[in-house]
Amino acid sequence: MPTAPSTRENFKLGLQLPTDPRWVNLVEMDLGEILTDHAYCEQKAALSCISIIQGYPEKHDVVRELAPIVTEEWGHFRQVIAEMDKRGLTFGRQRKDEYVNALLKFQRGGGSKEQRLIERLLTMALIEARSCERFRLLSLEIAEEELRDFYHKFMVSEAGHYRMFLKLAKSHGDPDEVTARWHEYLDAEKEILASIEVRGDRIH
Image (tube, rainbow, N blue to C red):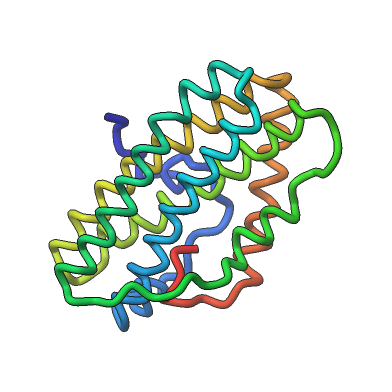
């Protein structure tokens, strides 16, 4: 199991902007909303991995790395649904994800198939990094102790996924060029986050 990231330097995820401190307070106003969004995030993470596997079956390292993530992310989806059931909460409808949609727009179009794979992996790494940061906040600051433990486990998992996606991206291109592009993603993510309303019903 991957170890939890350091709490220093935004636990070395490279994120350029910390989450607004009001976010956890907003989350606590309606746990059903944040749990619903969390469930959909886990579901979409599994589907994203499946999509890459289907699009790049010849990339044996990618298939080997992503196959277990599919199982893990779907297991997370089931865990969140079970937590909602335990609390008597209703699973709501999927909502528009402004954050992810903005990151997708930042992806470079065209290019080689290999370059498009790198763009997708960097996007996924960044989503996992931000999720890790958010789950850490919940694990430390949400009032209910049971939910702190619940989200600590997700934090650790997302940290491992972030590292894996970034490592894969660097293995499929020039490492220096991929690192430079990663920093461009980090800069763009800062602007995206700053432009989005702080809402307690969204993981991102």
